[in-house]
Image 1 (spheres, rainbow, N blue to C red):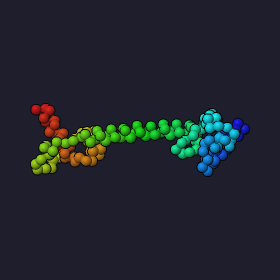
Image 2 (cartoon, rainbow, N blue to C red; image 1 turned 30 degrees about the vertical axis):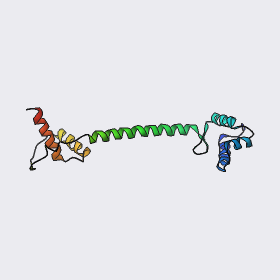
Image 3 (cartoon, rainbow, N blue to C red; image 1 turned 180 degrees about the horizontal axis):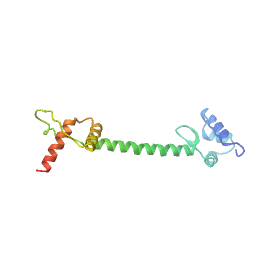
Image 4 (tube, helix red, strand yellow; image 1 turned 30 degrees about the horizontal axis):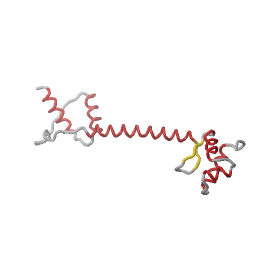
Length: 142
């Protein structure tokens, strides 16, 4: 086995495995045993993937695992953001009565922040956000 390049060896072994041979049978055909075959392949950076039933390069598996871990962190962050977004609730008792139209002047930076906030919370109406903000401000500053 030492005079065969990695790719040819892996291709030959995987071909035998795909034909239904067991790892023990392949090792016997190569005049070695399963333990030594696994050791030789490990030395060449290949591991036996039991679920696939063949040898694969070890480094790509580590890279796939690292990528999956990164994706998991991103998913958890998205879930956390969604949970925080869902926690934004409005007291419906404040939102009662007749709705009237009003015109207010705002500073430009506040208007931009408010517009961005409304885009990030499409589940809320602008009038609800303004009503709750005004009510809270008036309550806090009696």
